[in-house]
Structures are given as structure tokens and as C-alpha cells.
Image (cartoon, rainbow, N blue to C red):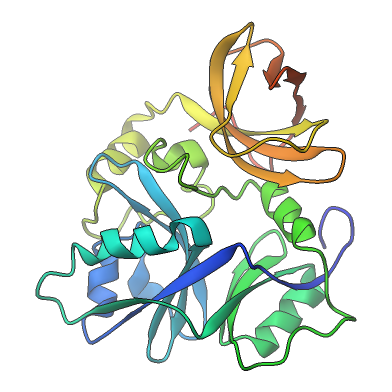
Length: 282
């Protein structure tokens, strides 16, 4: 169950998706995304990422497998740009990439909510924190009011679980381990090469990543990904993801591991909250 006991499903209008199809789709994605795409079966999903050649994450991807291809889910603000960048690598591969116009993205939280979405969606990615993301045809009926929840509840549950996100203001700023994508199962260190793999593998084996995501509570709602976190008026980190409530927000912030002191955003002090894993090691 989620932190506050809420369970249900919700439409996620802030999320979009693009379809990757064709005879070479699996091999193509295996050479681009950080997860082991070959292990993904229909109608399942896996958390993954797409990075630049320097190993900096361009998008956190929820990759879903359908019988006729793959669906990549990400914030709507980066979906088109991510699909366009990925298309640059298609070359002679028999692969098509198209932004989905026929699917809606849904979230679920709580065991009952996840089961409900799994029974209704075309494909679902289940996360360990009893959250899930799935896609449904736009022609399908909306969620029943009995199972409907606020999208902020889903976002809150994901942030409490330490699941990061990438937006236009933060794209290309973080190596995957800074976002704990290794601990979230989004990286395969056993498969072959993919874009950014050399840097990500080196960070894994040498343990030289000195910044990691931490979880905080903030007593305001006016904060956005990309905002600076300061300590003693010096920049100490960057906001990665926000669940903004009426009177407070939960934030994932990538910060240097060696900084100490009271952190703040827009002059408001942050209250540290524990993640489900130790944020100080890599």
C-alpha cells in the first residue's frame, strides 16, 4: 500500500508516449536504452533511460511491450524531442518511431489500484512501491469514479519511492547513478553497448559519482524541476522532481554528497525525508 493508504487509478495528462515498431525494434532499443530490452515480454514494462554519449540522462523511460512493438512513456514536455533524438540513430534499421495519438497514459497506486489498471490497460509497468504506469486506447472508457484518485497522490508515491524524472530544464545534467537508476533496476550492467554505456559502467565500477538524489519536504508549492537548492547562499543541488500539494511539496533533489548544512529553495528551508535506500552511497 502507499504511504497514506490511498489506492486507485488516474489519468496522467502530463505524460505522453511514442511508439517504436518494426522488425528491428528490439535490437535498436537494446543499443539505445540502459535496461535489458531483450528481457521485456508483452504486456509488461520496465524502467529504463536514454542518455547522451557522455552518459547524461536525456529521459527516464517507462518502456512497455506490446505484441506489435514498444511504447515509451515520459513527461509530455520531452516526448517529441526524445523521439526525434532517438530517430537520429535509426539509420538503416527497420524501425519506425511515432508519437502516440491513440493512447492515453494512466497511473495506479496501491495494490488494488495496480491490479485494476493491469486488467484494463494494454500494457503496464509495475514498480516495487505499489505504483504502476500503463497505456490505454483513447476509445476505452475512463476510470470508474470508485477507483479514481488525484494524480498528485500517484506523483507523491513515486517520489517517496525515489523514482526520478527528467524535464527540459534537467535533461543532460545527471549521470544515471545520480538519479539512483541503478538501484531502481533501470540499468543492465550485463548487456552489450548502448549510448552512454561506457560512462555509466565506469561510474558503476569505480564508484566516482559524488552527487545523488535526496528526498525533501518543502512548505511551499511554488517550486519546479531545475530550481537551484542552496546552502549558505551557495548552490548545492538541483530540483529533479516535484509533487506539489496545496501547502507543501515533496522534492527529489540531486546534491553533492559532501555538503552539510540547512538546504533551502527560494529562501524556504528543506526538511530531509528518508528514501528507501541510502542516498549517500553509489
